[in-house]
Structures are given as C-alpha cells and as structure tokens.
Image 1: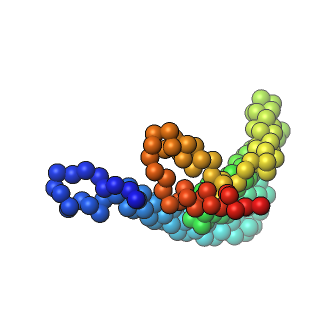
Image 2: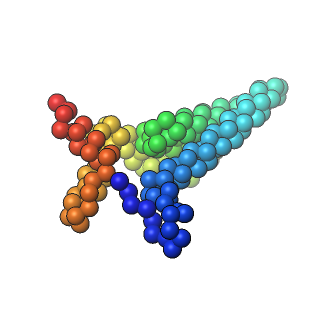
Image 3: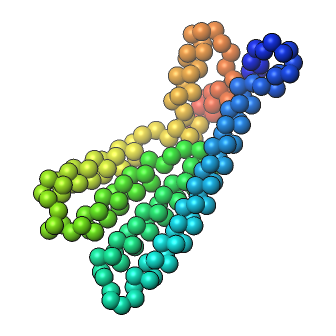
Length: 180
C-alpha cells in the first residue's frame, strides 16, 4: 500500500495518496484528450465541407489533392488520439504514418519541380528514417502486454532501496512467470 503524504493537519489529507493523485491526473489527461478528439472531429467536418466546395468548377487539382491529403492526416491524428484513449500509449506506427503522409502532402502540394533539390533530398532522408522506424518497431518488445521494461527497472530500484513492490508489480511478475 502507498503511504499517505505527510501533513500537519492530521487525517484531513489521509485520502491523498500517490495512487489517488495519479488516478486523478490520468482522469484529467483523458478529459483533455477527449476534448481534443471532439475538436479534431469538428475540424474534420469543416474540412470535408471545404473539400466538397473545392470540387465545384473551376476545378483546381492541386487544391483538391491538398485537401484530400490533409483530411487523411486529420483522420490519422484522430486515430492516434483514439488509440491513446484505449491503450494509454502513443502508437509509434500511427505517429510515423502521420509524419510520412504530412511530408508527402507538402511535396505534392508544392510540386516536385518547384521545390529545391536540397528540400527534396532532406524529405527523402526523412522518409527513409521514418521507413526504418516502421521496420524497427516490429522488433521492439511490446511494452503494454504484460512486459513493461520500465516496471522491471523500477522493481530493481525498489529492491535496491528496500522498498516493497506494489500490487501491479506483483501482477507483472506473475504474468511473466506463468507465460510460456
């Protein structure tokens, strides 16, 4: 169990433990992410309206393409926020995909022929790094399916300092010990 924070007022703050504080802060963070989701969804609706208006004659292909790609970026950002709400983590794959689509959108909107060669080369280098991140993340151990490297480091630190493990650490140990 967590020990309450020390206070001069006695039992008035006995409910104020680390677990309660963390839970309250996580709840506030979830509400912030939910408000971001609502705002992003509203902005996507406005962007769809603008995209349909840009389809009216005279048709500007570059503007329509930019609107469609921007809408795809917004959809991916929305998906990133939903994954965060569900799993309490930022998905590396989705974040990298958003970055790739954003760079490609800028190259398409500006036009390859009108962009300087150094900007094209730097965009290519950035895309290669993003592609490597997509490939490397496959070999990274999952950190939210019972194997959390931070918990192992935290458990070692607590053992070295003589602190007792928490119930979540015990569950992680049980999951690790019972896995095939």
